[in-house]
Length: 300
Image (tube, rainbow, N blue to C red; front, side, top):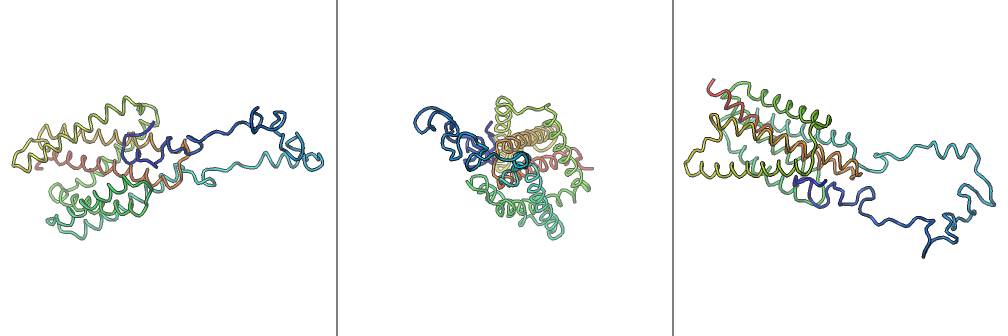
């Protein structure tokens, strides 16, 4: 199933439509088939210079038992030898991307004063531009993905320091909350409690589009001096919970697409695209978690 996530649905990404692992390629006729180009007599070994026996050597000599045993006991080529993506590749690339994000966040935390938003806003805008380039770029670019992680991490580190100054301890609470959501979604997906079906995807994306539209209206209203109350009070709590639920939904799409890519034999470099998609979802959840905890804690 093709994901609606723009990171995974770009042409050239790891989908069945790209023809990885033989999908989408023209199948050659069986060597024993009748018709033009088929071996004489319909024998699958009609072009074998050693006769009809595939195990016969020159002058009809048979392979020995030892040779046959060695032939069939040789290990088949695995994903590492064929250059195909594995789950280990996804885990390693995701870990490196998140490590870059955390390192940049720590730099912003210790280097920027809590009342200086300039660098944080600049990093957020730059991260958005780089993220769009990565999303719509046909080929995978690990340096751009790591650059995005660094810029996004710098922004998250700065904004988290501001929140933590007002509500001490909120940073570790948001991190733990994000980890719990990720772990719960992974368990639910692997256990089959959540199945990424076309109907599930359509409903989730419809809710996501409505949610983003509502936030956009709220942003415009705030710029005009109006307050819709979407980020405070009881309504803010509901909006925060919906935002976290949507982040979990995006994670389930990521899990399904990664599993599908591995099954269809996507190239190894596509593990970077998977790492980028997971990072986007985790950043979304973290920001929503940060806002929700801030609302719940109020002025304490």
